[in-house]
Length: 207
Image 1 (tube, rainbow, N blue to C red):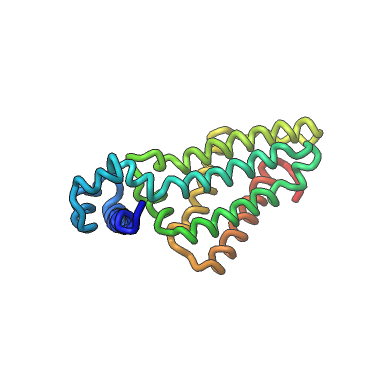
Image 2: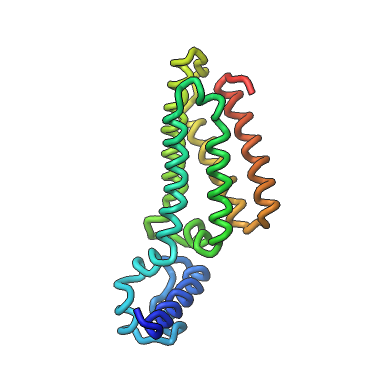
């Protein structure tokens, strides 16, 4: 891609970011994006096949990186010896959530698109996907507790879903409201302490 082509691409992406942030994916107009970018419709289609592909170009790699970090942390914890998992319960997830938070704040516009403006795209179900992954990991951990002789009391599946969903919604509030890094880190630490204590209580485990 030569310098002129790169400049045109940058203008399209900049105009798209503005339009998507203002109106969301579903209501965003390709006509407005093209007009703001100062290019023809034909020129636009030389770079992107659709509005979906354009939104993907702005957010896809950030979504994939974020979800990749989350899934890796879950896998790293699951691969620990059973006896080590209770000791590491908050450490691996805490480090992961901290790194993910800093990444999201560093790319705040893209994550505002994912979290607030992505209805109609593959990104709109990110929280639901994370809840599903976390729920499976929680249930796997409950089985580990049973195997090492520290069984948890019965946890109602609907309560489990509510608590996990609430945890992620709380987490993403820090990003949506664009907290300064020092406050974001403080809020994350307090949130983790709150939910860790709560889960230990529900699981019948000692802090």
